Each structure stands twice: as structure tokens, then as C-alpha cells.
Amino acid sequence: MSAQPGKRLRIGLVGTGFIAEFHLRSMLGVRHVDVTGVYSRKAENRERIVKLVAELGLGDCKSHDSLASMLQAEDVDAVWILSPNDTRLETMRTIHDEVVSGRSKVFAVACEKPLARTLSDAREMLRLVEDARLNHGYLENQVFAQPVLRGKEIIWRRAASTTGRPYLARAAEEHSGPHEPWFWQGDKQGGGVLLDMMCHSVEVARHLLTEPGRKRDSLKLKAVHGTVANLKWTRPRYIEDLKNRFGPEVDYANRPSEDFARGNVILEDEDGNELMIETTTSWAYVGAGLRIQLELLGPEYAMEFNSLGTGLKIFMSREVKGEEGEDLVEKQNAEQGLMPVLEDEAGIYGYTDENRHMVECFRKGEEPLETFADGVAVLEILMGLYLSSETGDTVRFPNPDLENYVPLVARR
Image 1 (tube, rainbow, N blue to C red):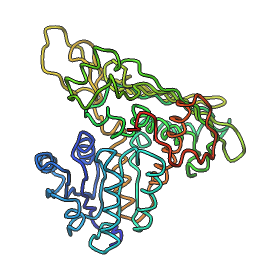
Image 2: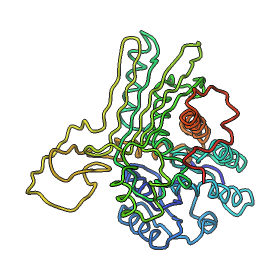
Image 3: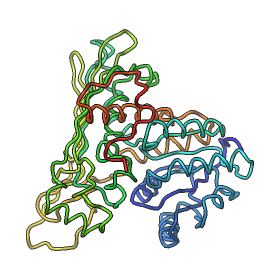
Image 4: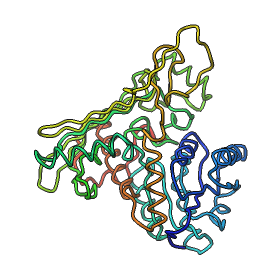
């Protein structure tokens, strides 16, 4: 089956975790889409998503007890892969087999970040999706964040056009730690905070530095230098905290993953000019909640964004008591005091515009702004940063040692 521009896109979800709910809520702002199927291993989780789809008015969603069942359904055109990192390659293999054999009429697939856990697996994801002749999108929400879209447009139109291209992008993302146990397990997740969050920072920085209308591979990757550390969660008190929350399988005394990472990425533009990306990510930040900071600098200008610098703030005294929640900001760390409020998290973080873009590209048979090829490029940078942090050396590209490299914290 091919794209059908005049019809609604019917999508099936693989995965029912936190990110699946975020995507569903963002789709309230997307036209021409219905969520018609969901697959995950646990029936109760599937039923929760079916109920949420109905509550949001996003379609008649059916629970499937196998991935093959959902792929063979007559009412599923495209698949959103939102399941844990260690399931994504096997999921893509099943999609490939079902489509190539003719048992599935699915014609497009979108995959959450990161595309895979290693560079070799990411290349296999790309090979499979291309071999099945599927349209494909890489779900990197920060590229579609409202401040990024508006900021990049203004900088390149007004400033770069008259004084020269930007040459330095800084991106930082920090919060107090993930929701689910598999994120904390290096062998399942594929790493620690570097893989989990620096995939965002690297790609949004590459996007900001790329001239509008050009693909990101117009910037040549030259070298990276990375540093990782365990700053908070390997302290005895927090080792016990993780065990109490997630059980003995999250054992930071013996099998920790990094909770802090820093990376420098050197690129070269088409004219041979050197460009720089500086990134920082952390699971050890305790503030109001998730904080994203972005900067773009050029010869005569600068752009800045801080996700916690909101226009709306609410203060609650000690007398206001209630259960813990995340109704004001993602990864909220307090229920009292002066709190920033994100009025539309899905929009500000980019999920709404990301899903709107993917749906329209899939409906019209157009190539999305972010594809699996971009997911591969991100993994190449991240694996270089992991190797650099392990050896202490700057990693230069091209680098064949990265093809089968597995980060230290992901080795069994």
C-alpha cells in the first residue's frame, strides 16, 4: 500500500509507556490521524492505551496480543515504535518480514529516539526499513520544539543572511532521573544518560547549525570528545533509593550507568569552516523539573532558550498539601513553592509539531525532516563520545572501531 493524500492516516503504537501517552496527548493537535491499534506485552497496559485513545477522541483503537496481528490489521497504515530500546531492532525485523512477505499493508514507520543501542544496530534498522521500501521518520521532538522552529527561522533569515552562519550550538538537558527501571540498566537501555538524553542535544544542535533547506549531512563530522561520570546515584543513600523504587534489578552498587555526560562535537561546513557543538546531560539535576537549555551563537548574534523560564508561574505555601505529581512540568520535583508551569508541554517540547509533520509526510508520501538516516548519524556521534570517555582520547572520523562498539556500561 502507498501513501493516500486524501485519507486519514491510521496508526498503530508499539509500546505503552510514558512516551506513548505523551505522543497520544500531542495528537490532539494533529489533523487527519486515527490511532487504531496498540501492541505491547501486557494486556492491562494495552487496555489503558485503548481507554486513553477513546477519552481523547483519537479513534477506535484495538488491543493486539501480538505485533504480527497489529501489522496484519486492515486498519493500520503506519507504525510508531515507542517500546524500550532493547526491543526496537526485533520490532523492526518483524515489520520488515510482514511487509516484504505481503502479509502487512503498512507503508510507513516512525521510531522514537534513540534509533538503536549501537551503531551497527542503527545501520540495520535503516537497512531493514529501506529494504521494505517503507517511508520512515526518526522521532526527535526537540527539532520540532516551538522555540527551536521559531528561533532558527529568525536567526537564519535576519542575522546569518547578513553577518554569516552560526558557528556554535550549546544544548543541555537535565532532570532527576527516568521513570522506568529499564532506563537505569545499561545492558537494556544501551548506556546511561548519554544515550538516553544526549541524542536530543546532539540532534537539535546539528539542526540549528544546518542551513535551512539543506540536509544535516551537509555538515561533515570531524571529531568528538566525551566525558561521563557518576555524580549522584552511586552514593549509598541513592543506591538504596533505586532498589526500593525499582527492585534488585537496578543495582547501582555493582552495575551503574553514568548519570552525567558532557560532549564536544567538531563539524565542518561546506566551505571548510569549523563548527562546534557543546552538550551536557544529567540525571542528577534537582530543580523544578526537566530543564532544556539551548543556545545558538554566530558572528553578530545569539539565541537562547530555557524551558523553565516560563511566563506562567504558580506559588503554593506549606499549607498546600497533596500527592506527588507531574501536572505542572515533566519530572516535577516539588509540590510547594514557586513553580514554573508549561501550559502546553506537548507543544513546547515539540511532540505536536513532530507528529503533525510525520503524519502529513506519510499521508503525502514525502520524506520527513528527520529519518532513520539521521538516527544513524546521531548514534555514530554518541558511540564516538562513549569511546572517547572510555579511552580519554579525542575520537576522529571516519572511525571503523565504532561499527561494533558497545559502551562500557552496556557490556554484560
